[in-house]
Every structure is written in structure tokens, then in C-alpha cells.
Image (cartoon, rainbow, N blue to C red; front, top):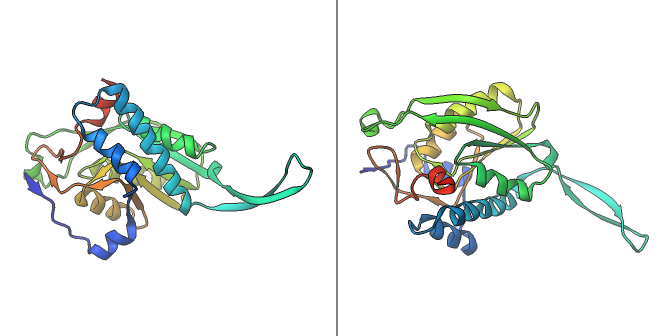
Length: 228
């Protein structure tokens, strides 16, 4: 086992990372970790986590004031989230339920998908968990001002960092948010190295990577557990 040593100062993480400690989300997380949760239930819970994470991210999005006419023939003023300017990007296949949950909250957001997978190593620790990443299919919206990049497990950060570099070339985005369920300090560190202005939303920061670069205690392979 490899215990993660944090290189970024703690104040940087506190500024850039939102660990969501709401009891409902932590209850969802516990059930996701449970090895006895079957894949239909796991997928449902992952989608539900996305709904709540989308709700939390919305507090940092742009809004406009608008007026509507009520059934009583009078005007009411309120705010509208400018989610039509957002692209939710799912890393296939594990992130699909999480991304779909976010889209239930941010209904006008666009959806993009990227097929990316790290090259598995028997002893990733000996390479400093610097993983090679194969990127295949990219199906991205033509434009976006804000990005929500989703992956349930932010482990080494190698995949996320590579995709961030791709997105920086594609979009002159204003804000980028990372939506994950479980992260590590190393993964967060690599995200911030790739994009210092990124903000990470997660339900937990787990302390250990094993030699194959799996998060411990983690929840296993999120893709396999979602889809069987």
C-alpha cells in the first residue's frame, strides 16, 4: 500500500476542494462502497449522487434575473441558472450515471463524452503512479463557457489531467469543475497542476492507493459496478 503524501499546501486544497459532507450524500457513499450493492442499485445511487453534486456546483454558476407572469396575471422576479452555457463531460463508461444525475439538476446543460482509459500497471507505484492514458472517441459540444468534468474515481489524476489539457485546447472556458465521488490527494494535486483554477467536488478523499493504483478503501471499479 502507498499512503499519499500531499505536496500542495493544505490551504490550497481547502480553497479548491469541496468535500460534500451532507448526511444524505454520505449515506449514498456508504451504500456505494458496500460490496453487496448490486449493479442496478449502484447505478441508481451514482445517478442520485450526481443530482446532489450538480445542486452544489450550481451555487458557483452564473445566474440572471428574469421576470415571469404568474397565473394571477402579475409579474414575479427570480433567478435563472445559466446552465445552457455548461458542458457536462463524462469519461466513458464509469461516469455516465454521475453525469446523467448532474443533467437532471442542470437540465439545459450540454453533454459530451470522452473515451479514455489509463493503461493498467501491475506495479504503478514503482512509476510514481504516473499512468499512461489512451484517449479514443471524443464527442464534445461545439461550444461551452463552463465545464463540469465527471469521473467517479479521481485516483492518480493521470486521466483527468490529460483530458483537462484536451479541453483547454478545445474551449476558452471560464470555469471548470471536477465532479467525483471518491478522490485522493494525489489525484487532486495532478488536477490542480493541469488547471490551477479547477474546483473539485467530491464526497470523500481516501488516504491510500494500492500498487495497482486503485483507491483504498474506495468502492471498486465504478464502471463494472454500474453496468455489470
